[in-house]
Length: 181
Image: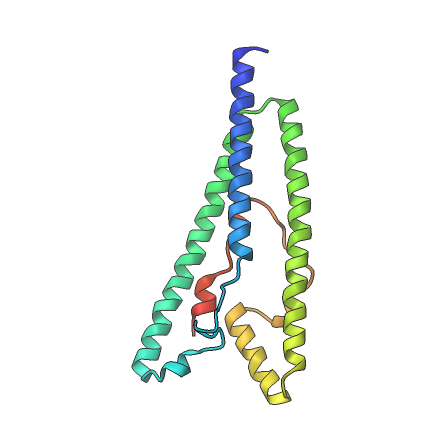
């Protein structure tokens, strides 16, 4: 094997390992749930529990709206970076290496699709089980909370039909949306 071919194989292997590590790290962060101990804060607390003044509440909402907007912008920038990196790595590949790379990527995409379908099912089941415990008026409020926190209809949790792709697209859940009042 020529030295240049060995170099390309090493570069591609390194890039794939980096991509895999990034994907695993981002996926682990996305799937990680905060742990609440009995002495720790309750996940059900809201800003109402702080007894904030109207001014404080409005200012806090403004702070977190800004965080949500910036988070979305950073997420989009990350996707562009990922796409550019992928294109640069692909330009290093021979046609046969590109075929091999595509097989690896297709396997990743298929596994990611299955994983996200499992995640979506768990969320959908949890929403359904929670609704079963609530009265009609509580259920309406809960659905409004879900719509506000998830930014969508709570019934959207289908089977993960979104297109899984690069590690940047498997970002952690938008923490700003979860923390926003």
